[in-house]
Image (tube, rainbow, N blue to C red; front, top):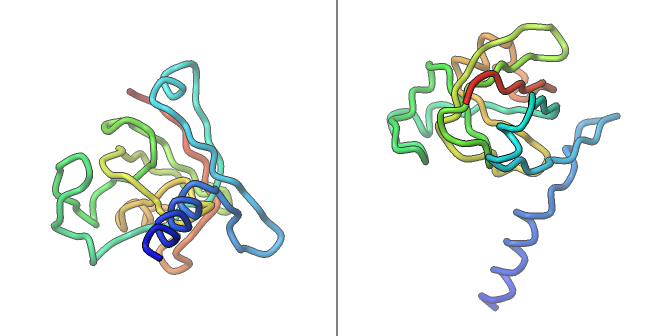
Length: 137
């Protein structure tokens, strides 16, 4: 039974399904560190934010997470990668640095700190269609 649960978990985490938002379906496309540094990388998809439950805890990079800071989690981009994140619906942008891994919800391309989400005016909605542009490695 445990083996079956493990197989199902792995399949769910690696299948890259669609976000359930009416009229839209964006698949997560994994980006490796090598792909990120070749040319100009721009990704478009859904981002969410995370806050209090992780505030003050260590991120995957070893830093202490500050929910009011300007950082994000990405599945594959190297720690320290600087991104400009633009909310497609309102044109607001913020510069963040990758310091954690995630998101672990299918169909999302980034988890932003609450501070970054606030600047993008997406705290209340919790999710937004965004564009991520790598600006520094």
